[in-house]
Each structure stands twice: as structure tokens, then as C-alpha cells.
Length: 452
Ligand code: UD1
Ligand code: CA
Image (cartoon, rainbow, N blue to C red; front, side):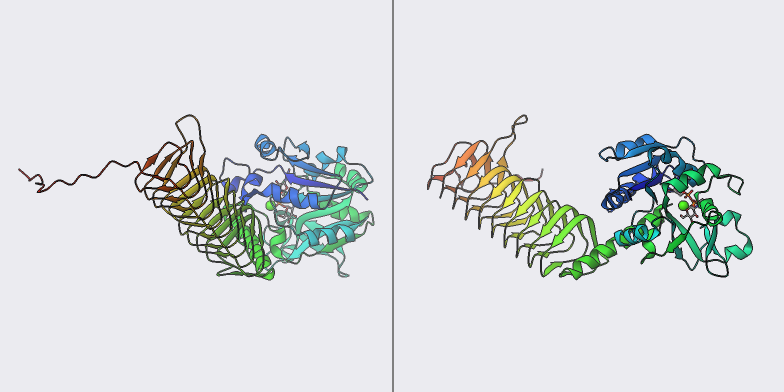
């Protein structure tokens, strides 16, 4: 049966106290609604319908890349009304799954199981909580059969003692929803059309009801305020940290790592505390990441060590390279095997050859650096004239003395040597020494100025 997913995201989210719509707040660098869409997509539905309302334009903008059917709910008259808005574009033969845009971490296994078991039935994903305050309660008869869902505000004192609650995630055949939803009434404590009232209708119509609980509570937790958002962020990071350790990586402290994208680790990787991974990062065998490093869209070759406080973005590192502490590698950096980049060095759009070293306080941008090169402390590639950028080419086995300015475009041939403190703006041929600093003068018996 073809699946249609309806994501409810029209509510206001007042308690976020934000100019941003609630579902656009980020968890692990991704909007809450995006998490739900990504999960829904993995179920391979025929269509995902997103019900929007409050700040709808911002939601639409934020998710513009998605192939969604956008359903405008002009007035938020309740969850039943919200689902009803999507029904006209769903065929009768479909099965409908209702998800909430502010419940980001529902697991794939849970949903697959839920949908499969609910086929042709009304499915309710429920959970038993120690404190059920605020939720719709699942009311069962003495035989244990579900009779209704009663919202907190409509519940009598006895119903309020029920701890089994409605998570909000439901599934039903579209044909049944089409018969039930127009019959909903808003004669209740909140004056809303409750989706949950279809449960009593299913009982009347003798439609089978399937209930199931997820393996983890966080899978059905929603975000209403920033405290809950932070709590779910931690739940998410804990699952990611556990996955890494199961895959063979060691973490100095699984409570102090943040993965905001996809991190792949090969065997025996070690990650020290407070590291942040963004985008797609791949760490090879035996890679060691020191404390407080940030890596975004990088591939790090086997045996490489990053020392503390290194910041890498869009960089591709070979095997057994050594980085940091305090290194900044910007997009387009490529390091060949055994290259070394040390403290307070910035590299951008440059390839550093095998075994070459840029150990201290340098800027290398728009450059090609050969093998076994030594770039001395304080070397700067002057790649920018204020309007255009130019390339610096450095051959193999070049030795660049400290505090050298290489004014691009410029080429240093294989084996060239540059004297410390030089400003080089003409090409240097292979095996030449280039030195451009002013000659030193020594003056005898120099009298220093005295204070008057
Ligand atoms: C709902 C359920 C309750 C359940 C709880 C779980 C109903 C009547 N109640 O209550 O049984 O225990 O969720 O969190 O369904 N929304 C719209 N349009 C609307 C109203 C809501 O899109 O007109 C969206 C909201 O943005 C939100 C979701 O639906 O994502 C749930 O709405 P909310 O008002 O939070 O429902 P609850 O009162 O929490
Ligand atoms: Ca809610």
C-alpha cells in the first residue's frame, strides 16, 4: 500500500521565544523539521505533505530544497483539522502516517515496525511515562482494549492517573481518515478539532487499533522550549557517540563530542574531548584527534595526528600527517603523506607535498608546494593584490628561510634556497640561492638617546 506522510508543523512555538519558527530551530546543525523529513524520506513514501501555518514563509524558505507537498493551514484549529487539510491530495487507497515537525528523533526501526503492524488499522504510537501531565491519555477498557484518547484538559481525575500517553504519531488508512475527520467536533476544553477523537470513532466503527511503544523515550519527545531542545541534542549526541564506539573508535569522553553531520571512523581512532564534527568527515585508521578540534568536511588519512585546537575545513589529508596545535586549514587544502603543519599556520587552497613542513606562524594560500620542502617560520604567500589572487609554486626540496614574503605569481625551482627575511617577487631557478634583504651595517660606539 502506498504511504503518504503528513508532517504537522503549523503550530506557533511561543515558548521558544524566537523570531525563527520552532521547526526551523536546529538540532545537530539541522532544522527539526529537516530531521523529520529525512526520516520520512527513508520510509520511501509516495509523498510527504508538510502542514504549515505560523511563519509559514520562513518554513518554506528554510526547506525550499525539499520535494514536499505544501499544505497551508491558515488557522490552527487543531491536529485533526491540520491532517484534514492534507487529505484532498492523498488517494483513498493510501496509508497515512502522521508525524510532528517538532519531534525530530523518531527511529527508523520504530516507524517501519509501526507502519507494518498497523496496516489496515488505526495505529497509535504510545508510551508510558512516570509523569504523563499535559499529554493525551490512552483510555483502555477492562479487557485492555483502547477505547479513546482523552486530552489532559478534558480528562477527569481518574483518567489523569493514566500514564500511557499518545505520542501524537498515528497511522490510518486514508479512506478511514476521510470518513472520520469531517465528523470531528470542537466541543471540548480547547475548542479544537482533535485528531485524537478518531480513536473513539474507530472503536464505534469496529476498526482494529494497534498500539506500540518505541524503544527509547527520546524518539517521541517533542520540542516546546529551548531546554527540551538542548536535552534532545544531548540524546542525539549520545546515540552518535555510542555508534562511534561500537564501530571501533575511542572517545575520551562520550559526553563531550558533537557530531553535526556524518562522521565516519576507521579502526582505532581516538578522539579527545570537546571536538566538533560538521558536514561529512572521514577519519582513517589510527587517527588521533586532540582536544578542542573542529573538523568540517574533511578526509583525514591513516595515522594522522591532530594536536589541540586545530580547525580544519574542506581539507584532504594524506597518511601520517601531523597537524597543530593551533593550525587552521581552510577549504582546498591538500596535504600529501607525512606533511607537517604546525602552530599558528593558516593554509588555504594549497597542496603541500609529501614530507614537507610548514611548522610555525605562516600563511600559505593559492600555492603548490613540492616534496621535502621546509617553509620557515613566518613565511607568507602574498597571494592577493587587493583585486586578484595569484599562485605561488614551490618545487621539491626547497628551503624557505624564516620571515619570507613570496609575492605571487612566483615560482621557486627544485632545490632553491631563500635567505631569511627576503621579499621574493621574481622566479628563482633550481638550486639558486635568493636573498633580498638589505645588507647589515654595524656602527661602532653607538650612543643611545637619553631621557631629557
Ligand atoms: C497533541 C495530542 C496529544 C499528545 C501530544 C503529544 C491532539 C489533540 N493531542 O497534543 O494527545 O499527547 O500531542 O505531544 O492531537 N499542529 C498543527 N496545526 C494545528 C494544531 C497543531 O499543525 O492546528 C501541530 C503543532 O505544530 C505540533 C503538533 O501539531 O507540531 C501537536 O500540536 P500541539 O498543539 O502541540 O498538541 P498537544 O496539545 O501537545
Ligand atoms: Ca505538544
